[in-house]
Length: 113
Image 1 (cartoon, rainbow, N blue to C red):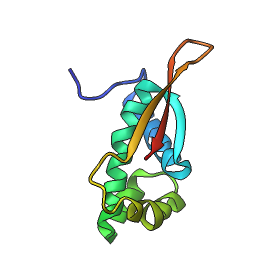
Image 2: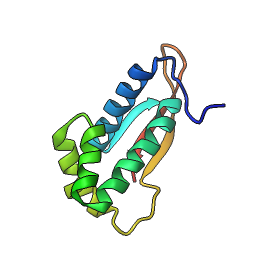
Image 3: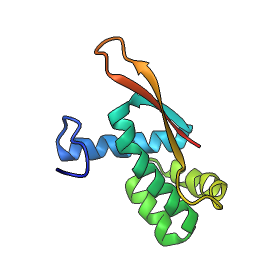
Image 4: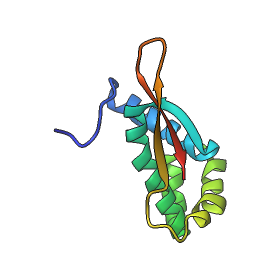
């Protein structure tokens, strides 16, 4: 079994969606999405925050290569990284928030702790 979920998308579409949703999470601090998507986004966001804690040019460029907005990368390194400087992992939280009305998909709120 693979270590990730395909989410009904091709590899390119899935990676584009995960990059965008990770960027949105870091930009806004929280987001509502399905539980399965939240479980895929959380580790990517944690990795971006870990890069921000390194606070060097190589890490910044790695973050820029993944995130879709340059100002979010700047916010990540200027505000979010220092905020979690004394914390070793566990930067995100998934809170289940009921079911979506249209297709009964389970919804979760993914937020930065």
